[in-house]
Length: 469
Image (cartoon, rainbow, N blue to C red):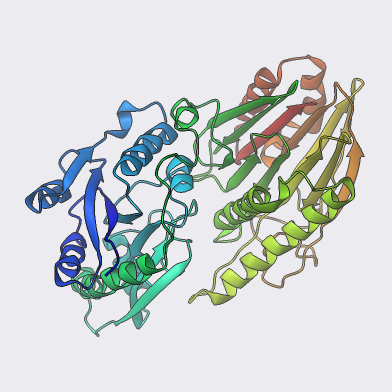
């Protein structure tokens, strides 16, 4: 029999699936050993459970760290030092950030109490899932074992088990049924997945732990980001860029997603359409796809000048197809839609390629003049009601059609680029030019723009990316 691989567990509460995993190990059905359990809750019952079985435990309180990235970098280092090959989530309630995701890419598994992609996503956990299932009146539900990535409940599915609902089902009775299915499916899926995992070289972390730990609110790991009011900035070779993504004063959640890579090659905004129930999810998926594609192939040095535009257009279209397929495969109909304005910079030739669909905008400030670079595909479209306009412009439209512009622009030293969601436009386009004339630093400029939006009530999410070239 092959050597036992080491498993690490992340848990926030009872760790309900831990006993079934340990039983599978004891019976020989799972050729592994649990070497470490980490919790974010000092009073989590999972800690006591692990200690009873002789498993080492650690507790890290998130509020003692400067950022979620620093927190997850610490957890990654602890698992790495223990030579953990696979991380298993057992009721872990925190969203995992890039330092841990990158260190253990495709090596973090989770179980979710529904048949994903149905009844998944932010806020869907525990009894909330079962209550939603019953309220919707579906006849079957179940559990899903999947890999974890930066999108909540969207990682590749490893296995699923169907559970039928009875005529007088309650959330508690359904919870028990699903848990019983999980207790069988989760260890089996872990055992099968471990068989195909390649060995890890534990002599070196796959990223700089020092870099991850020094992350703070103004300098993140390269990624797309959203939700809370945040400011991110990067500098490279005399160029500077800053991004802000803010929920505003009237919206309950932020459906915008901003992309700014640390190499200052890609910058953009995706604005989830308000009338689409999954507009927020659409914008996240677009930016996630673009970022991953760039990391995997776009950032290679052999990407030539003439290929920048074709790469960007192809990537946007592929993202659209992926979102469409996700929507079509969903058990229940989902409404999807997002704008997109994204730029790709060719440093060697001082060019930017911009792809645009919808009403998010790109501007150029050059020689004391403001130029609008993009056009709206939505002049007669009401994003709140979905009415008006025959052209379904936005990314992921259910009909699969959307307007997509692609153009290139020569850049010169001293140029300033602005990409923004329509939330900024409530403060008027004239205000955009006025602020550029004040010659503020890009950090001051981004904060001033955001304050301009707040001064008129900030009725929408506001996303801003500014670059000094």
